Length: 615
Image (cartoon, rainbow, N blue to C red; front, side, top):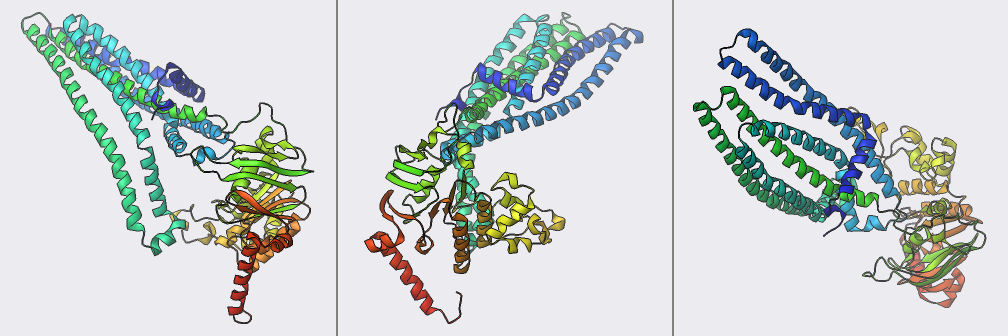
């Protein structure tokens, strides 16, 4: 699998470093200064040590060695203190860069018009790697600074070493070339491996989430799925570990061979130095300087190799980050999109065909529908018939593969998606239960209601949720979750309450009621999870709110849609019947058969109930 994550370019490096500098200019500058200052310490210490030893060897006086010794003490103190400042500056720089990069990443993700990318496994793998590499600009800065420090240190020690033996200097440098080339190649292989194991790790996270999720806990416990899910999770974890292990074994063999080669060259140079000193060709200070220089060159080369490998890998990972940030809108948006017109005529689906890709089957097949302004259109049909897909297209989460959706004659692809959605209120079958307070959960339906207790309460009353929410330990300020608490207040119910499915359904309805004045109200199974009495109450309230408003209603319970102006029967992505309830019953088609089956089921259930029973 190839892509932006497998390519390194100078432009990518400039972009990553530019992001880092914009995020923390002062901190990054100070960090660079500390890094460059620290570069001079090893070379200075080596020369001062040489001067001290040569002075002692020549029977110098105490006064003669005072200068070099004091220099060693001063440089040693500075060398000991400076890394602490560098560590703080690096941590602060990483925090600032990480914050800015994360903001840029999710702001770019929010530019997606639809939801298709979030249903694409390949994109999800890239997004996961992009999140992991959001701090790569900071790590790249560390690598760049480490490379600069290594290069300067190398230059200083190579110059010192060359003064003593040019041949040994050349051999030490030549021995480092394979290490440099290998480091780059291994970093590329590591980046490729991380992308390849992405699906495996995503499945591992999925199983781990099932094993630790309260939503799944009931079935996991009841059906005894724990060992089964744990086995699959560990199998995926083992598969990912095997991939990492194979690469690391390869790295171990290669790096060990290169280290032995480098050590052999350095050892040969050291032997030459010692024997030269024995012959009187070098002083004791020269020997110490040569040892320090060889160690310094080797350390600088190791730092260069490490910086190059890390920087190369971070640039590869930054490619995933850049790919997400640069992805742009997933659906086409005009350069200057207009606002949707006021809904006076209606909404038309004109010969709409849809499938998720060329490899997928058709979900909708030539759908023609008209939803008149102020009217109610109900969609009925079996699961998977395409009803909820129509809702996704109306909200422009996807675009039709063929055909068009017209809002008062204007193709919704020509208007601003944000403005279009401002005109729509909705309750989805798979509504969200946010780990927020009750008030915030409702106000999310219209953010202008945040902090407006009156609007929130009115919406809750309309949905029949007020009695439940006002009775919570902290009323509307009670958290509707047990996710956030400390050990000291674990037993305090005020820290969070878990609602039942039916109670959550009413909260989701209240969220929609905040948008009841919008041009279009979409109700996708709005009473799912409610008992018969609550369902009747909710639909009564919905009829009152829908009166005179444009509404699209989806429900499997045909009794809930019989008062719709038009009912459309959707079968295998096609509209097979349409008309009023009475017209469809009289036509004696699929709708009539479903209605009779449901009515018969209700009649039989009622006949079996004891007198006065509500269940």
